[in-house]
Image (tube, rainbow, N blue to C red):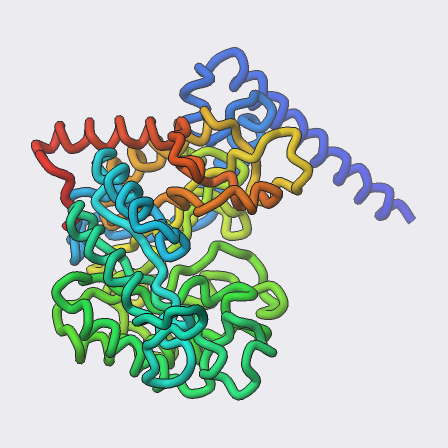
Length: 434
């Protein structure tokens, strides 16, 4: 009869001890350590979150840390990691595409990640590259030829994101979602072969799909690592057939803890290991991840598999090492913090920072990577600009570096200063990518 009461007392005692330790950490954090030092470990700027983070860091020492093999040289290596995601296919005026490239060049950036939507190039049917949606009809390549030409002229390396199948590639059309994979993966293979053949001397870097581990990037289906690996194999082979010197990126894995596969997604660690189990190792040259800081800064060093923070790529690196891929780099194809206004009605689903914090965090992210992660290569900020402000009602809009009218925000100015300063220190004259 006394055992339940004793168990309750043990529970209370443990709770008191935990609370005392937490309060001790809070006291220690607030009155002993400098706030800047605490931020450098926790990514948190307020005393209570810093104390909680310190507790998590302490508890994390009881778990095995990721094996990153920092001593292994990765290939390809890059000199200038600064890049940005662009949406130049949405810009109607060629002059605006040119201005985008000029501003990125002037800011010392060496890379753009630009989508080349399959549905906007092979529009009406297989092998049909004419755009007949408006008068007069024109080549569907025309706009993309200009994007490639102007990016090349300003010295920007292009990471060509090849995704978004046309409706004709599925018997059900868009019924299963406009991002759903094609019925016949060889149709995708034919498209990427044609694309890589056309731009062989002007584009070297290609990405097969985007975020295949989360909804709705695989359409109205459960995400499927094995099926994605099949698509990756076909895309890789056909791109290399067109251009043996091409570098192929795996589709960027989104950080998520979901395990249902649909309608949410599949944990990035599980997805990646299942890709390896399905034979993906020989079919990508660069691993790609998304690197959003979300609710803490880039110096958040907490290593917990169910916590989404800037340190998460360390786990991806660990999986790569364990699968014999330590020689391959990771590129962060989307990175940023969301500067949605505090009074905005949209839910801050990506976290919320001020414009000044966004600028500071992005700079600190590049600095941390440069100092600590030798296996990390290009980092492309999400994103440079949208063509208009029609999406101001959405949280996603507030990742931008400049406004649609090209007004620079603190993020652009801060990264420009950091990039140019870094290149001056390295003795690089003109912005260079690889």
